[in-house]
Image 1: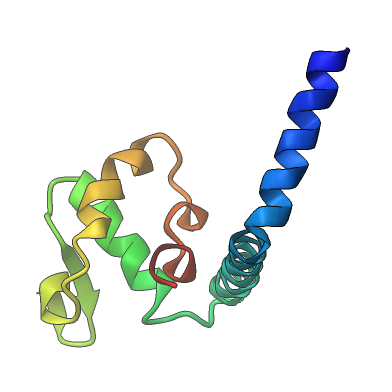
Image 2: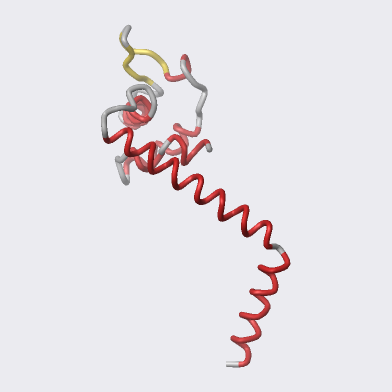
Length: 111
């Protein structure tokens, strides 16, 4: 019991000593959470035509053998002609586990 109390007290002292980092981490988490929530809600309302929707299509195409391909108003194009976001290629294997846009929300990855 005394050992647990000592560990808890050291943890609290560490938080007090580095309170600005704890506050910064909390604010970053809130920021990312809020913008991720609104980004996903916007996508679910079919209002993200050129944001999450084409990221979703790019990852789906990459997983299905058409590397970084997406459909535009002018036909098929490479995602590289719009953005150079290689993080989509890195997370596309995760799409095999969970094929949902929530996995790679724009604000969750880049904010």
